[in-house]
Length: 217
Image (tube, rainbow, N blue to C red; front, side, top):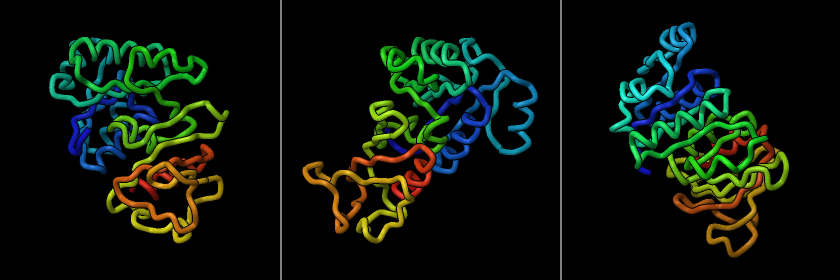
């Protein structure tokens, strides 16, 4: 996916709102669908965004949000089944749209048969959710090592760590850069994080967002 995307987020709670803020800061157009009137009012008070009050599983509401021009829809409510329903409805109305669902880790990978990506944002934070919504620049291997996240991360142009050697980047404790940029060697202190190249990264959940800040900006 490219820059300047049109993105719909279903669910304006903490995860949805923080993710929307990150995406908007990156220059994307974001529309939030939220059914709770008070939450809609809170969002309107905090942030100048398009907010639609309603049920995101309702085709009329999704169409009102501009599903026909949207590049991606992320269902980030606290209910896994509702998030799946939103994504299925969106895919029916716009077959080429990217669908991302927030799920309870207990339901595992079964949802990947129906959506393009699943998220466990309680573990990884809103920034990782935003990266997954945008596309494939960050891929998470969820649950292969318990609470540890193993990710394939593409370094962004202008990111704080871009064009620097690992020895010159102050990654937080709980971070391990595993591979070099061609995946043929274990990363070393003199490995340079080149913009546009991908690296295998292992992180503990509580530092994942800080690592994304360094590598993605």
